[in-house]
Length: 140
Image (tube, rainbow, N blue to C red; front, top):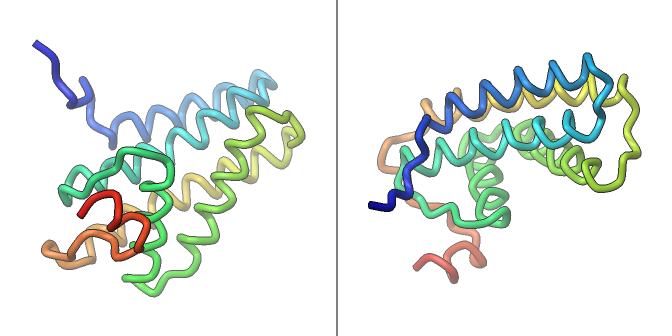
């Protein structure tokens, strides 16, 4: 039997990724820190999508969801922090961010995960799926 549901919830994965990012940071592993920071944010967005029954099949979907939540709550900080998290993921491939920069980005990712969860809980339960035209074209 095959299942598409994770063994553990996206919320648990998000928290664990933040913890792992902190551990990797302390070890000086910039690449794994970058990957875990992004993973924590991606799982938080997956949590929101799963709880709202919104499709989230790609990184582009995650972008649409995060920015839709930011617009719907009028919280520009969510969109800004999501961009920083995405840029941090790019560091996994480029190794250009220092330990101190990654420490700051880990703190920002923690803030973003909290902001996303708080925004999600404050939005109406029946909020329709994101209205981004690219998202709608793929999922309508």
